[in-house]
Length: 395
Image 1 (cartoon, rainbow, N blue to C red):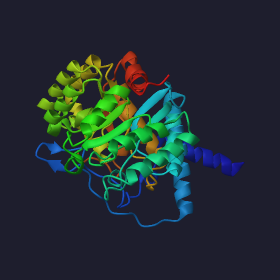
Image 2: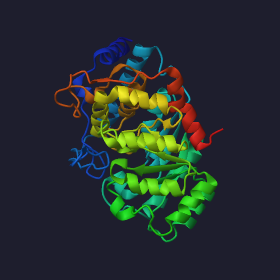
Image 3: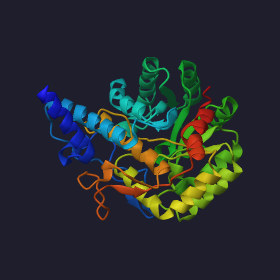
Image 4: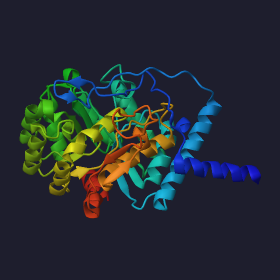
């Protein structure tokens, strides 16, 4: 009785004030993508990550305690702040990656708590998941098979997307096989700065037939395109194939320079192509925090962007679901709520950017505060639910 009282009291104290020791997270393994975006001529680029030093091993019992406590603290803090896990439910997370099925044990509890009804998991090559290695087959198909198995276990919560290598001579037939197996959408990486050399150009031999197939079937497409770099090539494709059911993630990677020409070009493109969508994901770890900071000076511009294109934006997290030790249920909860709060609140805080976090940005306050967009409820309903359901053709 006494020990239970003190444990409950301790957890409540943690929920109210937090302890730096619980916020300390292990470094990402060398084999997983993460870290700050490298700088290019225009500043930071979401496309490019660097490896970070692996952590020393720690006892599994210690890991279990940390995971359990962090999950309970995250739940208590949210319950105390809002009275329940999420005031809004039925959300669709339109952009995630998955390494192994067992890693869903970490992501799904946080997703459910945040009101997420279903998540799109896009198939990934080894380079995307591990930060190095091949950028094509066989892992593209192997990872898709993993996501299909996850769909069997969680039929209402997993939406499987396959992918393809533009230089695979069998790509169209492979895509058709994947669709027959249960693929509900296609992920393309050819417009990613780290992939263009291997997957480009956009008009690689045989891709015209793929684009025509996508127009005919209306299969949802998540095509990563850095519009600041590849706008001309992208325009050429969509002008030739204007009926593709297409979504470009990360605002087309224009959020790093919101006052630059790329955002205005994106607006022009979206006005001309009403079936062209973007998602709100920024990236993982420091890329997420640096991205939110980059958007702050242009919040009025982005708020106007959401109001004008409220029918052409979907919400996503892109945290990359893996077995990395820091990626506990509590960590996923922090990422999910940071991406939600940026859209929903005028001012919000995230422990990911707090003074004791390894992601703390020098010069910012130690509470991890950011300015958000505070979008109207009717716009949030479209961005977080309705638009994704229409794009994905969900009943």
